[in-house]
Image (tube, rainbow over all chains, first blue to last red; front, side, top):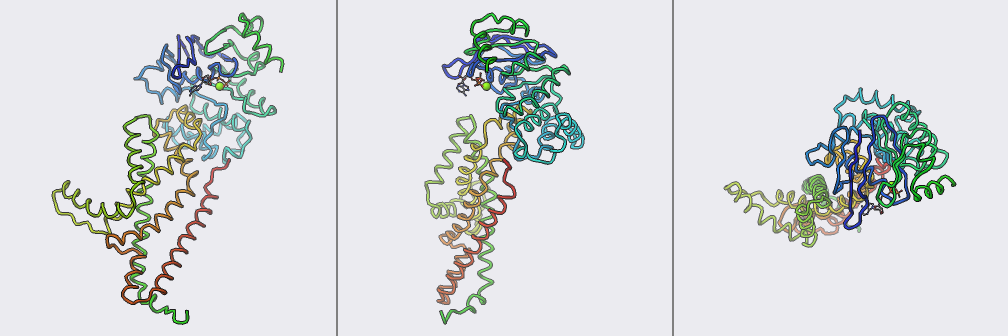
Length: 242
Length: 226
Ligand SMILES: Nc1ncnc2c1ncn2[C@@H]1O[C@H](COP(=O)(O)OP(=O)(O)OP(=O)(O)O)[C@@H](O)[C@H]1O
Ligand SMILES: [Mg+2]
């Protein structure tokens, strides 16, 4: 579903990504972790071409992201993305947030879009908030809306970039619960997160990045059992202890 | 003030009102046109294409470094020539009409700077979110960025419009008759400066004051809930 092959990326002379290679198969859940600044966000943003890269290739569902002929809006519409800071559109109601791309990008009718949007809103437990604005919701609620917004596009896979790291601790679980449920339903997911409980519960594979490179790419049990690299071991020890 | 003669105002009200209408029309035209052109200029300035950046920067810098009166005069003289070159016909468009064009084009430079900081005030994550939903560049701007930029900048846009409203009086330089010009002409003829200039001041004050009140009201109604 997502094939990342030898991807390298530079900001000027600074290399952010170094020869990254990995695959995410259909219905697979892959967790990406690593220290701050290791390039996790950059890698995941390369997948839906929010960030360009200079070397290598990424193929999503058979479409080469770096190909200049690729219709990027069309590709991105099929790839759901959830951001650290939610990024709901603050000037629109929750309903409009859920429907605008369905209408403008997928060409659905307004009724159809509202119907779909409200169903998903109900699914994340926020049906009563439909008429409100993002600023009137808590962080956890906003993030759940953001997930519903992405799902409304019927994505073939979902990308998460630290979806819980901007949240107060008591709101983290309500978001993780939605993600766990998604994973159980067979959604293909690539999640940058340090929530190792989540990784343990649903991940198939864990990728560990450091200084722009994929240092470790292992099945979950292997990763938690005995990460091969020392850096991954140290990292795990640090985040599991706090 | 015992000889303040209200009848001078009443007798000439028709002429004054005509001037006021012209002032308002030029203001509204230049505001709408200026914000539209200004927004396009701002997008060009913030685009990643150097020629567009240069064009927009040049446009803004030129108009911001020339006094408005001079631009009004220059366009009044040049515009008919340009039109004649294009159409091949004599086109006496007149002072009153040339001012519509001049103010729109001139104010666009100022509105563009306002819209530029408005666009920059929208977090980059919003743009990323727009693209991630599958929006094109145009949709991301139109649906996500510009509505927020516009709302954030509304008070400044309206303040600029109030300045524009007052600046329309500069059309005296080409002999067009706006509100101030109308009052001025009556003063010259009837020699009643106190009545005329008081009226002018009061009307300008009432309109500008009402406008700025309206801004506050509007602002609280369309502000983005955060
Ligand atoms: N626009 C940019 N220009 C230059 N350098 C950048 C830019 N964006 C990111 N970087 C650098 O690239 C590196 C990787 O950034 P990235 O955001 O991908 O890291 P991350 O692993 O997501 O970190 P975090 O856990 O803090 O989110 C960092 O060193 C960062 O400073
Ligand atoms: Mg990051």
